[in-house]
Length: 401
Ligand SMILES: *Cc1c(COP(=O)(O)O)cnc(C)c1O
Image 1: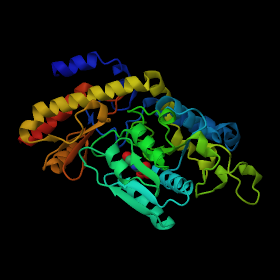
Image 2 (image 1 turned 120 degrees about the vertical axis):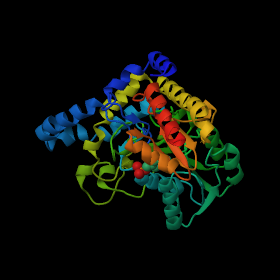
Image 3 (image 1 turned 90 degrees about the vertical axis):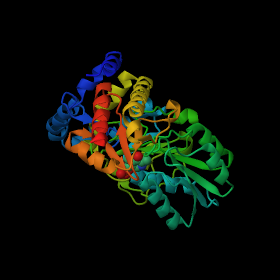
Image 4 (image 1 turned 90 degrees about the horizontal axis):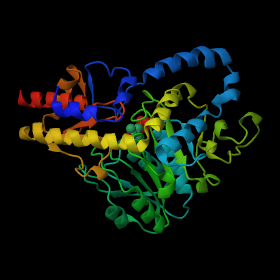
């Protein structure tokens, strides 16, 4: 084992958390925590207990006893531990795609008479596709900002397209390709100065880069829970609606679970006065269970300490890339400034597609993103410095071979 990696692991104040994750004790090198986090061992126990006692024992009574509130209870905890959001503004539901749709429609409806939505060309595909769908449905024009795929959306670019026609700016906190951290407070301020609203996607930041949604004045936000929140494949997303927008929030999927009194079963939809109105149908209670262990874990570690480890891991990955991979022609396609870089690092080389396929066969698991990027996603609580070292040594060996 490399001495420097060993020293970094020895001095890591969060090192002890790693053993709580399934598979962390094997030789597999997992560098894709930004696509699907490892499960906590506690999640297996919780799922079993849930089936045997809560579901199997309480049966339909579970809805009255706790499940009806769970989307908001988990939402509040997420707000507290990761989002800088006071209680009553976050609900857990649906997928990110569906919540994006609901909140983009709500945001556009809150700015009648304005007919433009600002989007950037390198936002995650589903965000762009949803924006296109909403634009077609509502007769809006998309104002595309051309972002540099090795960096990301700048405040200057946003300033250049805002006008009194802008209804909403839709953007990602951390870019999925480069890991660029957008200046959320500055972009939000600019949009507000132009009379527009903002909808931020936190999928690639939540659980690794802290957010201060209330302090930043954000209007709406969404994000997923299966990346740095280790919720498991297809775990539900979350939506944030600033308290000042709740009373008027007009989301288009007005189902019974967002009704002020779901069991009145009366005629007509009266939305719940709070963030529950963001819900549509029966919430995925089973799929929320893993968050009940992961969120307290992040709370215990502290999101600022999680971010500090994340910066340590990505900085080390870049240091190793410069030392071991640059001689093979690899370039760093992520920001070098730690403050502008989220929780992953993208390394470019024309052979990365085949390199990643070979790595997977060797139990070294990063992922690949076009055009030539090997993406290393470093989940702070479950990744060691030694793991990063072993992963990058394998890349070097493959490129040398
Ligand atoms: C991962 C991710 C999504 C995923 O959306 P799903 O509806 O969960 O498939 C959306 N947007 C961004 C920015 C992401 O990183």
